[in-house]
View 1 (cartoon, rainbow, N blue to C red):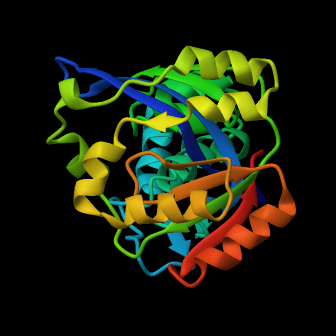
View 2: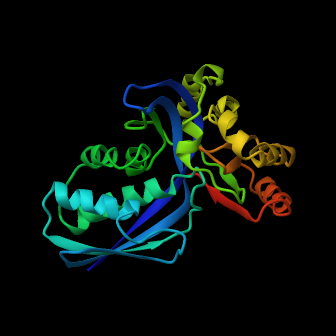
Length: 281
């Protein structure tokens, strides 16, 4: 028996860092939305053991892998006596700020919930996902949402207006922990996230993107100055907004005009090898 789950990437439309918590995490508020760049996971039932395979040579296929950790957590929590073989088709760049690993974990929760007949609710899966990683609960819901806490409080809102998303991934990846470890929160900008939410709920794309912002850009650009250059290029070529996603280094532009989107992609290909044209989901 085989089951399939898509694991869409995400982008942060607005991100504020409020404070550092006593548990070591940072209190955040974000608006996030999935996009149609996705990994694909295949689940095959097998006796007892958990095994992984992939088309990517850039990630471990053992207990260090977030998919393995997720399957093990689910199996142990609910005392499942069955195993699974999981094939991970990687399409989302790694260490890119697009939530690829978190989305793979969320897809694993959804897929194994069906494969193992656990009948868990979305809320239960999201709660479990919070033990794996901060972005996993959002990826379980897999829809536009206002996200708070350390990423574990997810409030779905109306879908972000349809738009084309131009993604540019600079060659050098960034590990999330390196961005957070030296944050000086008092120096970070704060963005009007509630106004963005109101404009999204009114289905006003042009008004919503006026409030786009990512407080983590300040720190990430110290590690990778190409982030600033790519943002400037995307805006220069005509996008309605340009922003780093998550902890970077991927930068994205948004437009509702397909011809403009194609021109931006063509313009960027001379500057960066990894350029994608996708849509919001």
